[in-house]
Length: 157
Image (tube, rainbow, N blue to C red):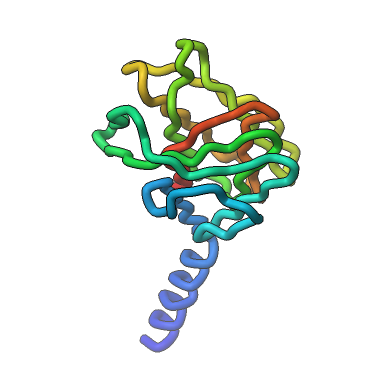
């Protein structure tokens, strides 16, 4: 019985250690300009030569799952979000749709060699939802690739 209990405890510890559990919502951040690199839970916001600001959402932003957003995180230039993710998890990004109706384009890269352009279009003219399957455990970054992206939420589950 002691061995079974020890095995279960060990498996639980391993399970919690491997879980990336990233969930960053602009609604949880203070309004205003972010002036230095900042830790947001398990995510690092790195400004580089770019900028970041949390602003009030001007549109009624509700994603496909019914989640409503009141704030947005705007990333400009080479600012980025950095986080850990595990193989088998899914990256989910909810962002403001470009006002000109074009595709939203974000750059995803990792220390495992991933270099992807994530794109998405809006079904409602307000929000864009992008999902990406994580194929290798590592550290990932999401950026606007030198442009501007306005993000409501980033989740890895």
